[in-house]
Image (tube, rainbow, N blue to C red):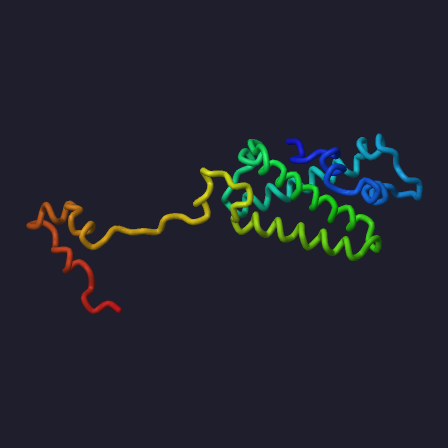
Length: 170
């Protein structure tokens, strides 16, 4: 399965110079072609997409197929989440570089993943609005007495409903 964001999405949303600084292991700045062909970025994008999928499945609001079908603003938000996680991972790859920015990206990535894990409706899919809030209503006493179950139909063979349960139960 492909990542939910591409290297060009990452470059569009984040500073290309910082990305280049974080992916290179030497002091030479990478070219645009090197950034676009970077195996480090490709691996981190797949890793971040996997983290998003794991959080979504844990939250039980969306499925990976739902993420693949996103369009418009929701797709943009998904790409932003993946790119934020990638930036946090890039800073983790080069510890000690831009420490304050690294903390900010790490905190933002954790916030997004926690929102997905707890089932918040980030992508605003109309058929998933109440997915995390199941209906917990039960039949009323009147509904229960009007069920006309087998014991009520065959009163000579079964005990009355009131005598089937212990009276002094706490």
